[in-house]
Length: 198
View 1 (tube, one colour):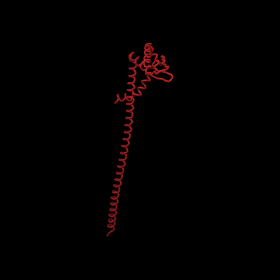
View 2 (tube, helix red, strand yellow):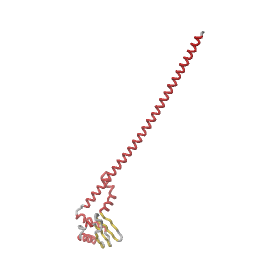
View 3 (cartoon, helix red, strand yellow):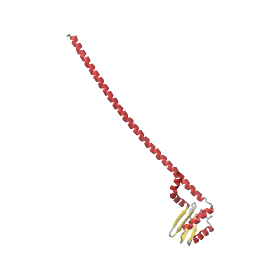
C-alpha cells in the first residue's frame, strides 16, 4: 500500500467524519429550531390569551360603567317626571275655583281645631277671598261639631304661601300647601312611581 492510498484512506475517513459531524450538527440545529418554534408558539399563545382576557375585562368594565350611567340618567328622568306630576297636582290645587278652595280650607280648619285658644295664620294673598262670611261659616261649623274654641284669624303667612297654620298652647298644625304637598309626595311617591313606570 502506497503513501497515496494511505492519504486517500485518511482523507476519506476525515470526510466521512466531517459528513457525520455535519449531519449531527444539522439534526441538532433542526431540534433547536423546532424547540425554539414551539416555545415561541407557546409564548405567542400566552400573549394572545392574556390580551384577550385584558380586552374582555376592559369591555366588562366599560359595559358596567355605561349601564351605571344609563341607570343614573333613567333615575334622574324618573325623578324629574315625578317632580312634574307633583308640581302639576299642586298647580291644579292652587288653581281651584274660589268656592272649591274655600270649602276645602273650611273643612280642613274645622278638622284641625279641637278646642281652646287658637290662632289661624292665613296667607295675605288670600285676604280677598277669606272674608267675614268665610270666618262666620268656620265658627258655625265648629259649634255644630260641639267645639267651642276661641279662634283668631291673622294674615301672617308668607305672601307666596297658600293654606294655613293653626297655633295653640298645646298644638301646631302646618297645613300650608307647600308642606301638605311635601308630605303627600313622601307618602305617595312609591304609588305614583308604580302608576307611571309600572
